[in-house]
Image (cartoon, rainbow, N blue to C red; front, side, top):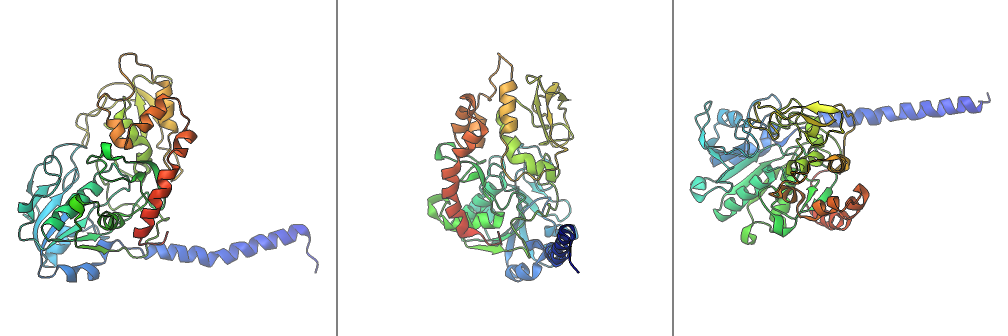
Length: 398
């Protein structure tokens, strides 16, 4: 039988389709077999037996069955000395930047030490008698998200006090790529301790390995560091998170947009704190050419939101279906061009924008009218150089 061109094409398509089924199935099986490090107790419980343990944790420190890691450890007779809580607190309800006090966990009676506010680095007295600090906090893979700074300070204090650090690894929602300007020394702060780009493409466990390996801790000290890896994790896959990492990152969409929209926190533009769509919308009273409107109001996690009670005009990005795997400067540049307020500059006077960006270069590029392409091209050499460092600490398939 002689097949026509049309029939040959159909047969070819069918062959490709059926030959791809095993691959699709294997990919789905691969993802189904995924487990965070917290769900691999056979790897870390033996390391904690008969040790005095401090647990660095928050509301994201959950096992697959939604049991909290601290509760699981107590059930398994692990001797927990105290809990270290990062920004937003142990239960994750505090506003960004809000001072979080020390306290007691009502469920277990364990003392909680806040590592935010005046005590970002654990004091030696808090580590006295401890053998291990077990760290299990869901990060979002962005330089100015403070959990990597908390890990770094924990590692530094642990190194100085001869305490081991064990990190239970979790997925990075922005893994597998790097983007953004590099942090410069002059602008280092708690929202940027190290010379890395905004998106650095490492899990929090890999990041800790890099901090140790590059000797970025104070005085070049290194911590005794153990990484408990995830099972069947791939850096190009997306797994979701166990719980919202902070009050204003309530879902995968907000986390995906966060690296692009967080720059607005250094401007006169709201990112939707005090609304149902934080980090999914942006707007200002002085960008009236935009059609979308919203008014920030006090809610849980945003008790006094920026531009509280003021009608803002901007864009709603919550319906975007695209998985954004790069920083988008289009919205920032568009808002800057449409901003009309002779009384106040677009950028906040405290130049918080420069701390977010890692230097004053991005702000100056925007003011000078540089295009998105020109700005992103200026990052290329730094990103290429960082990639050489990043590659040394990758644990998972990329």
